[in-house]
Image (cartoon, rainbow, N blue to C red; front, side, top):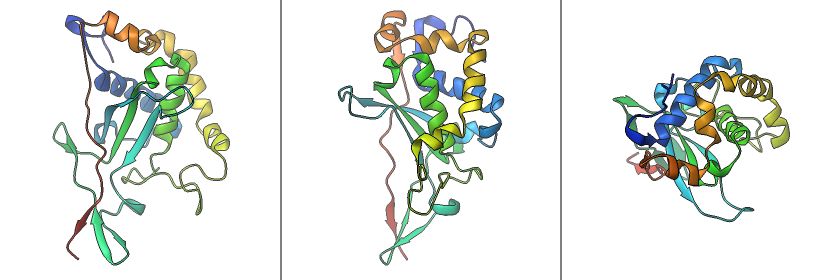
Amino acid sequence: MLEDPLYRDDEINLSHALAEVIKDIVRSSASLSHIAVESTMVCIGSNRAGRRGGLYGKLIPLRFENGSQVLRYRGRFYTIPEVSHNGRACLYLIYFYMPRFFNLSWEEKLRVIFHELYHISPRFDGDIRRMGSFKKAHGHSKKHFDTLYDSDLQKFISNIHSTPYHRFLAMDSHSLYRNYRRVTAVRMKHPRPVIINS
């Protein structure tokens, strides 16, 4: 659990703070209980697109379909370079984008977090949760996709005032920089598949 005060010495690491929120979400949510948080790394990206454009969050799987480490495509073989965090190989990266994600209300931040986590395969094998043969990520309807974790989301929202997370999630990007002398995060480029020898 996060301590109170949340962070020492007026410093905050946004990746670590969001990872703590995710740990509590996974502990309390039946639909996400398959997630091993220690093999999932939280990164912060930059996105200054206007209100109507740009991302709030994104899940990056580090394996291919069914957890395969190798993909054959047009006669070539690809793999994704290994990403390690705290001495453990990661299967997923989750990106949240500054400032768009942080300028959401705390309820909407949680909705984005749940949405990205629900994309993780129930097998936790580095692949996404595949919702259909055509529209694999969301299936026939994103709206329907969002209903699949909504009961766990609403339960978490109803209990959040009894946790240390509400104060942090309620801060927008300007508040974070006003309240903390130093704001840091894990930042890295999205890993890309690379060609390997067949």
